[in-house]
Image (cartoon, rainbow, N blue to C red; front, top):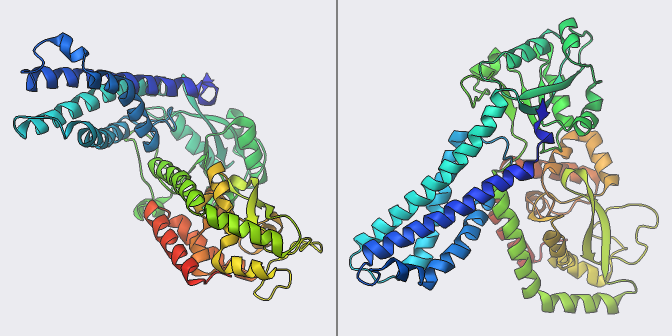
Length: 478
């Protein structure tokens, strides 16, 4: 049996991109022929004249690329081996609506027409061609993949967390489904004291909960299914906490009657076993794409707009205190990976010769101009470079050093949840609470960053950015 990880995911993505480009090309060609020969037949009474029109070839060359970029922003090419056909229908429909509206206003609105009815006819013909051709091809590709999963020819490497009767029952339910869901169990993790003998005869015991992240890496696990006897919620929470920083693994939990009554169980298929699915990504893929695009555009704009201030600040830093203009410090970012965060130097050199220490309002290590920079957050201008590199975002929890993270996690393990997203130049915690001077204040600020994680959206980002600008203008930074 071939695992999905062993398949060439890029090849599957190429299939979707190739078909999307071809369908966009064909839709435009058919639409252009229809429009010129049907609506503008007075000027285009010969097919050869249509092919001599420069707009026809501009559309052939550029529109397939533009459509594929729109689909990429929407998240169409993410998780290409896990697509659902009804979800694909919805995504294709809305992308077609948005794309055709853009084409209509960009290319067709200034055309000479006899009646406004021709506008409506043109819009619906282009929409039906674009949507119909695109979805038919996608449906074939998605259906082929679904067939391979349902016939057990491919599947998702899955780790079963649990070792008792409930774990065995969960395995049996998943394995005996009318429509196979694709879970290939690499083994189970022992949680309680006993191990079901039937389960042990079916798959290996791979260790305990502390081994879970290492096992995920070793076996390229895509799904973790938690099936613990007696619904021990404390143990379930501990296991979920071990997976907090991962957004590449789907976590599912076997429900009890209370979960079903309270509406925690959502199903995507009539034939599949009911499981509680924990969404590893706080936002939808298209919002991540827009967020990243906004990060890039706004950072470029900020660096250009602030370039005079950038140069003046760098000059003043250089002449007011000895040492380098910039300061790079290791911080912990997305998925717990370290990166170098850049700032204008606001402290004297060797400020941490006695070890890591947080700054305070009356910190003698801060230079006189450093206090001015911190008040208006000028020292953070170089972090736009981090945003362009992709190690940071404009909005996200502020990154900390591992030295302080270790202290925070001892008191608030949920801090690791923040590593599911990129750190930011500004954050909800930064706006509501400001800079922290000690670990106690870091823990206090944490609740605002957790609220951001639960309410993460493009709208929330805009609000945080607007409040940050207001704080900077008022000089209420530290």
